[in-house]
Image (cartoon, rainbow, N blue to C red):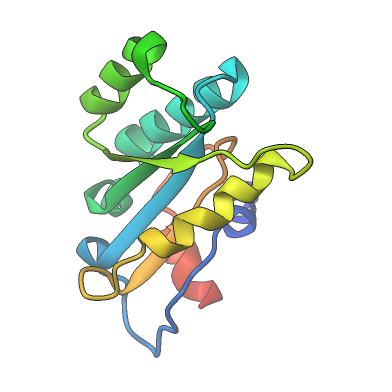
Amino acid sequence: MAVSMLVIIGLCLLHVCLAKEIVPKDLLISTVIDPTSFEVSRDALTLLRSIRLFGGRMNEATVLVSIALEPGGSMDEHAGLMAELHSLEVEVDFIEQPLAPRPKTLNKFSTFHKFDATRFAYFLWLDADVLVMEDPLEYVYRVV
């Protein structure tokens, strides 16, 4: 039950499910990585590995990782991170990191415009520090 609560806390669904099972191909899972933060990058990679290893049907969903770069920033010094993401077979895009005095956490909201309603019916946003230990779709379905 604790795992289900972690997943529920970390999610944001943009579609109302009316007594319909969530089909993984209709699901976009999204998270954000700040490549300048070792802790956030480590946590996000752990999240992605946990989806791939323990996510059950969730593993069949499309996973989008948005990398938050400061204006003019580059991934040149983060080649290892890019290789890890490639090996986990996730889609990667880049978003702009908010500048001070805005909090960096605002970068999470910019991922919402990545949701393509012609391609997906559901959007599940997970914070980087979530860990998946079993297929959470059953719990998500109960919440919706």
